[in-house]
Length: 198
Ligand SMILES: Cc1cc2nc3c(=O)[nH]c(=O)nc-3n(C[C@H](O)[C@H](O)[C@H](O)COP(=O)(O)O)c2cc1C
Image 1 (tube, rainbow, N blue to C red):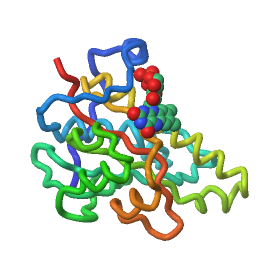
Image 2 (cartoon, protein in one colour; image 1 turned 180 degrees about the horizontal axis):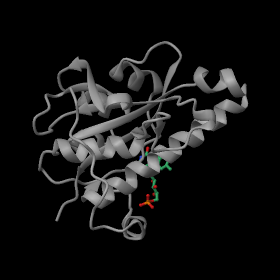
Image 3 (tube, rainbow, N blue to C red; image 1 turned 30 degrees about the vertical axis):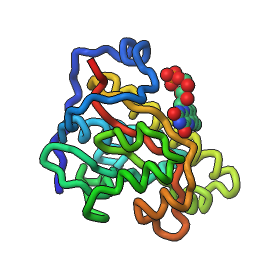
């Protein structure tokens, strides 16, 4: 399904988003709006130069090793399920139907905010895309790139009044099973999302 078009103007300055960015682990009960999720996915990996298919986050040699998944619990107009973000046409592809947030919470060492979130982003990497060009050094490039995408998720979420926290502590294989990773694809990051409590 195609996602709502991202907006490129908002009344929050970049400086304000940097200043206010915090790791937030408590969320309101309000379901997430699809347009807000769409905006965060765009900030993470959206196409910002269609002529060259370059993305929002920099990538060593434009090799784009990252994949972005969404584990949906409660989003308006989006069924619970696991989805893959397709940057090329700013859309979501259904991977699995049903609410997998409990599985993800268990995979993330019972970190409560994963279960409380209305959706979680999972970033994975296909290292081969980058190491086939840069060899062993490509491994560090992939991790740097995940950091770039992660910071964009933080800043865009802040600008939308959405709380998130970078999660690196999890059982890799279990998270990879939840999102249905292909062989050679590894989980790197989880970002729970929910509106910040008033
Ligand atoms: C690579 C990385 C892994 C992290 N893993 C976790 C995690 O598993 N669980 C968690 O609650 N916070 C995690 N954090 C968030 C840090 O605890 C948080 O960034 C730090 O306490 C500073 O707070 P701030 O983000 O509000 O500035 C992680 C942050 C990074 C950068």
